[in-house]
Image (cartoon, rainbow, N blue to C red; front, top):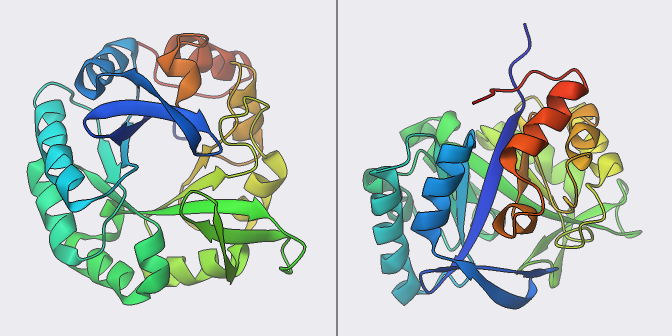
Length: 255
């Protein structure tokens, strides 16, 4: 029996508030993170993801408090990412109530950090955040970016994915920078390419606009599907996303 497809609301947090923009730009307020997390838990979310979009030292203490308060009332896995640069950041977030840690730019700068996290806390804790963009400069046609897609690296996306799996990745959070916030649908071609080489679960992110987009991501190989704006604004509910998956023959955890 196949595992249920997970539906994961993503809360981008800045200065204690949830924000959302298009292609990581023009951020606007989307609500209180603890209230939203509690609502999504009641609505049947399988997991939650918090991303610290500012990731300053000052914002970090706010994030610890948010994680702690959320973990006290939301009893599903909580992934936290943004600005994680050293092993102590991971230890503090886990002790605050996070279940998994999402690492992006820091893993590119210091790949050894990824193996240290996996070895110390287990691969199940390590989610690799991949902000990928289409590019003719790489053999796969996709390049790894940093800083919300504004800076392109020299890393071919598929080569980097192969490397992070060797370093101990437990999951891959695959975000399409081109699709992020556009509501034009997930990048199915990108997801299929990642699925072909991934030995670990793949989380699809970037582009959700309607409930029908969720089965498309599942068909492309996603084990979990993440969305933000459509849930925050109520244009699609978690229940509607799961029903669309179920109607397409995918197993989901219904509430």
